Image 1 (cartoon, rainbow, N blue to C red):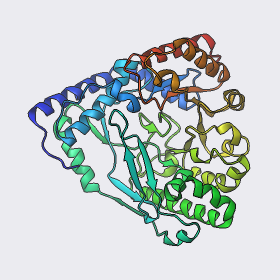
Image 2: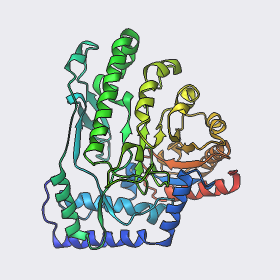
Image 3: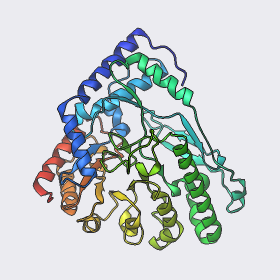
Image 4: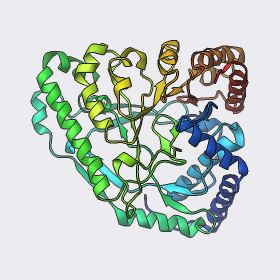
Length: 420
């Protein structure tokens, strides 16, 4: 992004948004929400937590951007995104008293160029895409794999930070932060070779497939160890995003005192998923994937697992054995009752993602249907540590009131049916 000076009008507008964020962040309710998230993530509370992820449906929630330059519009969008949950939804999202940026890094796995071709929907959003897979013949093309390339541009990061501080640093501090390191081995494979090739490779060339998995694990470990050695890792134990639509508040990290600002992998939340393996048997998952997920997961102090995949089928033999597992995704395709029984009385959080259809399909909100859906979740997860994240809602049908009404209904259902 080319940094050009903001206009006086853009500066006034961005500073006004920064003031709103600063004021919200310093409300007493934000301290209370932070405390509740910390107790929840440390499994010291029976109060279910609720978060509504808005970026997928923000076209129905955010006002039109007023800034004109690319950099100013990016800043404006990030500030507006940080305000919308408190202003319009009233879930448990915390507004932090800073503006977050990340290190300017790049990671080119196996030095492969995976091209992505996008298409736009009726609203002009670039949501659909396909990959041009660099591995077209397996296992012959494994020979083209090279050591991964990863770099950090500290100067560019510092320039971006200074640019922001010049606009509103006296109102809102600018911090370099990081969310949870994300690992999706099956996703990497699909990017490289496509879903069909991945599935056939396990059957046709099992030894070569394991060789590829070991190489993939080696490269990912090398990357994250490089991040650690370069002091690029940052604690994610506060208002930091976890990969599955959650937050990192906890007193259990770091694992020990940080020496001279040197954060280690074991001081962080990590995140993993394997959505692309839902079509293989639990036995095959245990053989071809789980050992590698377990090896990588052991690097982190706490672990959050799962996205849309139904984890119940691989829970007993695989996922429950992940080290430091604290959150498990209970997707709309998951057996809620099975997972409620499995997690009851444990320190693994039942992280439920309700079906997005009630809010995201059609112009009207089926409140009765959603209430029944929520009751099934709350009953199944009673006496578990429960968390609900609304995700994958790509349209509100023009009705911006849906999220707030859904959160309100969910709170009523929790008050009536949840057993701590």
